[in-house]
Amino acid sequence: MLVEFILLLVGGYLMGAIPAAYLAAWWTRRIDLRQYGSGNVGGANLIKVGARWIAIMVGFFDTGKAMPAVWVAHLVGLDLTQQVIIGIAAVVGHNWPVFLRFSGGRGISTIMGVALIVPLVNGLIPWSLIAFLAIMIINLFTVRRIPEGIGIAVAAMPIVSWAVGEPLELILGFVAMFIIMVIRRLTPRRTQVSASVPTGELLLNRLLFDRDIRDRETWINQQRAKPKKAGKD
Image (cartoon, rainbow, N blue to C red):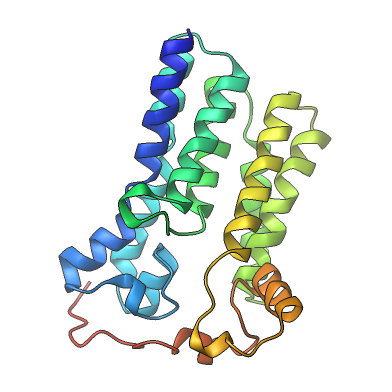
């Protein structure tokens, strides 16, 4: 089973590393998504450059990235721990894709995919994903603070998993995915906008707001805010 595990681990990473948002922006708008909006290679930045419907399709793709490898792992008889690790590899691939010099998105959609497929193939209800979605829906209809809501929702996943009595392997997997999200938020390079921000404040802003400064509009528009040819969705 070791060979199968290694192959699926690599396969999960490579599937996760497919930069769907970057490719969609290039194929449909002929733009490098890293040079627009927030500069993040993810569906949220596609929305910011006006590609809303494309971003929705990319979101579905990113959610499904981990599913084939995890599903095959279950079919060939790999245990829950191995399935979770393969799912985590897909999240790592999304966040640090080899195809974009290890600079990717935040992996939230891929985390959602792992939170769906791993419980389902093992006959469990995906309570952590349900909790994540519930928190985000409440956030959207109340305070509408998306980065903070995402951070809280991902942090809640291992807590909910523990509360409903899910296997330790799954709980630890959700803890690992939360840590991966935090690391990805904290480690981007500084931009000109944040060059003078003290390190402590910078890290706090990144952790809470997923940006270097408090001013959202300035952060989003720090680069070329809109592509020359936005086109249609």
